[in-house]
Image 1: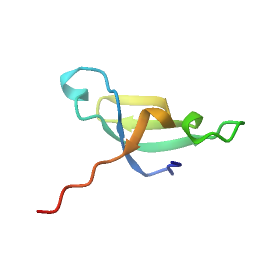
Image 2: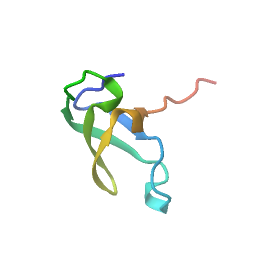
Image 3: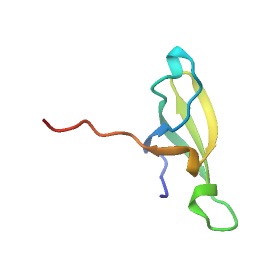
Image 4: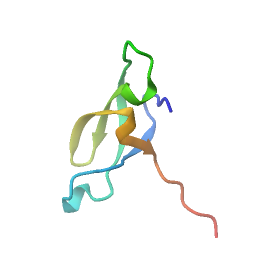
Amino acid sequence: MLFKVGNKVRWRHAVHELEAEVALGTITAVIPNETGVDELTLYEIKFDFGAFTLYGAQIEQEPQPRAS
């Protein structure tokens, strides 16, 4: 899945630190790869605990609240 600047995402396997447990962030830049494989696209993401560059395979859409 391709994400865009401004999308809210979750880091699938975030570090096991208390402030990083939820690991929700906002995409600030998209760095396409030359092969065209979505999972290898790089994303710069701003989290509350810092900024990181992650592959598309490492992130997913922010979970939506369940309707009751």
